[in-house]
Image (cartoon, rainbow, N blue to C red; front, side, top):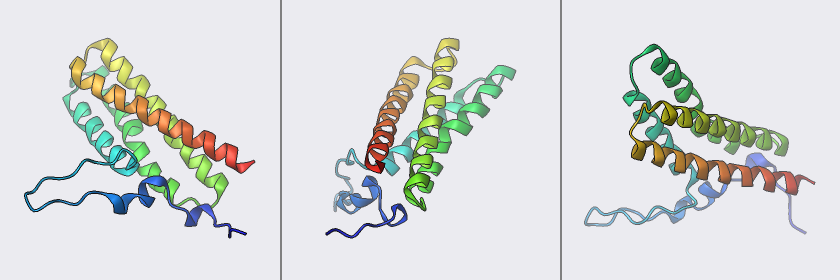
Length: 150
């Protein structure tokens, strides 16, 4: 019989596989980043959001959107750390849902930025693609956790 561990003792996939990251080679090249390194993806996405926010116009509307985008667009990285430190399955699920909620809000602000043509289409397309993928990842995690809780 397998011993049960609390969620606080469980590691999320990106941490379980972190040791599998390819190290820097002698010629300074890095290997391909694994697709399952969620923390690294969230870090890069957050940096992308910050760069995008810095490029938005310094107008009353632009400043409002920047503030909203920075709050929701940087939140998933910090909240993912909270997911990893969850104290129970219920806490774990709650924090996953917060990440998902913030990603969905980010998606909406990015769409508004596109509608207002405040950013270059290629730059915005990259952010929208990544946030949509992150939403799918977190939605699947929520579904799996809910299913396993029953």
